[in-house]
Image (cartoon, rainbow, N blue to C red; front, side, top):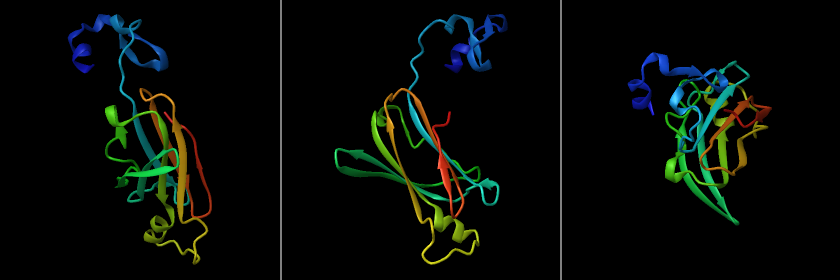
Length: 150
């Protein structure tokens, strides 16, 4: 996609939806975009990204749970790459498990034993494997919330 943009003269660009600069020739054409799954965690107790939090990803298939990967979030509270993308990303049900208590303990937060929230599992569905599914988590040792991000 970038190589197409770079070959067009500046006069060929126009503003499209969401204030993105889109080459005029592509405005009314269907562009094949591969889907991806991403996540982001914000530590709302301390008001910063949850750097170093461990996250596990599973696929849920008709009563079977298949482990896909484990990762640690970077300094921005994000994975360094999409959790799933292109051919490995397909429609279906998934589970992200966030190690919330381990993260807060590592940050020096005094938690009860057992902690109120230990691991936070989020089950979600992917209906369109060509879409971008962003699953953020806002967390403290006592609360969490999520939504489908962009």
